[in-house]
Length: 276
Image (cartoon, rainbow, N blue to C red; front, side):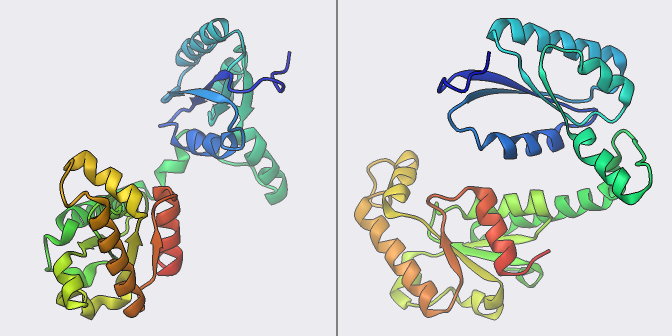
């Protein structure tokens, strides 16, 4: 019986893969965000790379179907046909991402795909992994303006007041995109001088600013230092007002992180600075 008339009901979603499951989960998330009225319980089943593991996955899925009284949704990126056929027998709504997309491409290209387990991670993993590790180390070393050296090698330098989202954005850019991201705080001394920190002027083309609603900033800061002047709404309004005014004066591109996810902020930065 379809559930289209019910709201806020809970369903279980499985991401089944012969690898880490990140591809299945990423694609599944993109689709499931269209169904905000459904509460979801998400389970990743990685490294299902044998028939025996496939049978174990089926048992897990069938057990969940009995508990939920609804068949689970399964996103599969299983490449091996024999393994995939086993999981397909589970009591579930089975969504085969490879069958959906690879087979039409085979038809279009006129060639067969390799159907190799883990192929999506094989070709450039080592190079990409090393690049991400180097970027992460760089971003950690250049967090919160703690290291001025080597800023010439930064691909982006994020600026903004304390707790505006600079550090998580820097690390996300490093981990997901291999981007060397430094970040630098704007502090009351900068506002009194009405100038950026002197070291940043030579890298002005790399600067990107983050702002945030004063009310949200006060909430975040109160979790860290409750009742302090640093966290007061008056001080937050002052710092945000001065920071935004400075970025406008200096012609620095910026955005408010208040209602945006880290992913949205990162993509905007990549587009604005044309980073690849």
